[in-house]
Image 1: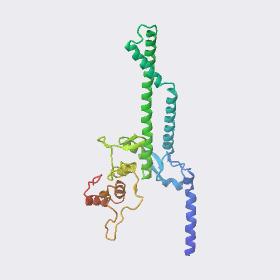
Image 2: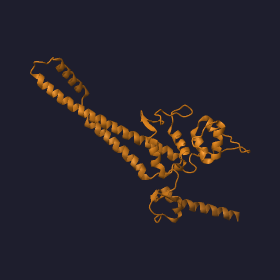
Image 3: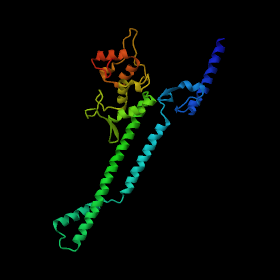
Image 4: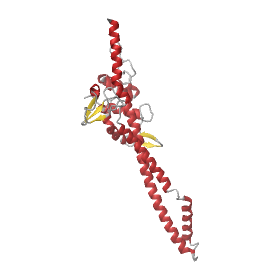
Length: 284
């Protein structure tokens, strides 16, 4: 009888994998308007969000969002190439010579020569055209750099948030929050506070994306799944109910604080009190 029961469990396991195979084959859509086209075995895997049914799989992001990031990057790189081609013929050295000739005219070195008037007119016309091109190039360059910075920061932030359990429907919310904090400097995201000063974590290191997302989990837990940040069990206690891990409020470890907040909020506030630290999110 026990052998038969074990065989039955094995058969059920194989059947379950067969039923789940559409997920691994990628045949289930991330978002649908109706569950009519979804097999009955998978309807329970969808939840209703903003009038649509979204596949509730940890780390799932709509393919349209990934395609949008990719297409934006390609478009911006094409604009940069177009910019380089457009101003390939502008010679800074030639412009410097024209300025030198203009200086000679102002000093009267060419005064009384037949070339004075012609040279002056040509110099002014060429300088005016060059200045216009240069100003246009500066504006386009600033615009492209700004757009590239936004895309780079958005991608890095969403990637880190997805790792820590971001709700698919909260992607734009996290992006908008991040744009008020992050700037791209020397190709790297740098966090700034409301006072305009660069942010540092308790360890004295530059505030990282992981620090920022851990802080978001505490400040806005509704943006993340219930077990967000809980890669390990942070609520380890001994037989008497005492917490045996290192108090993250004493070390300033925001990531661990976020994990404990999600797992055991009473413990979160108790550890904050023991460390004499005001928690990021007050008890309600």
